[in-house]
Image (tube, rainbow, N blue to C red):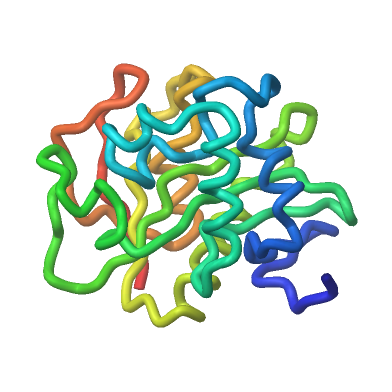
Length: 199
């Protein structure tokens, strides 16, 4: 699995979520109970009806199939050989965001979306989300993305509930060179979400 990292800093590297790395995807987004019908980072990747219908192993199988496609479902951060982070990234046109009534389209560019950033417990506070975001941008650019979007909360420095922190914060996106493109009607953890763009 020796590949050139998409991003690298302070011993951390970021790589595409290839099929060879599926066990690491499972570590990052698979539920502790394999029969559980949660997560696998599917709630914003597939239509709500399909997300609700997929149960247990079907959810794992769906994501495994995504890792076999030419365009990978996200990127993984590593500290040495240990997986420590995940960011979901894909063309907005392929996601439910394409039809969102709460998160508007800024323009007609074929934007890619980064909508989930997760860092493993015990590894937070080391800037892993920043290197993940850099890796996600690098991957999208490699795939021809003209512009990359995120939909973080504009929490103005207030604490965000960890269960909802996966959307990211405006400050994290700003540090990665994203700029405010639009407000939205969406909220998360009680905070307004904004569209941040880079490209």
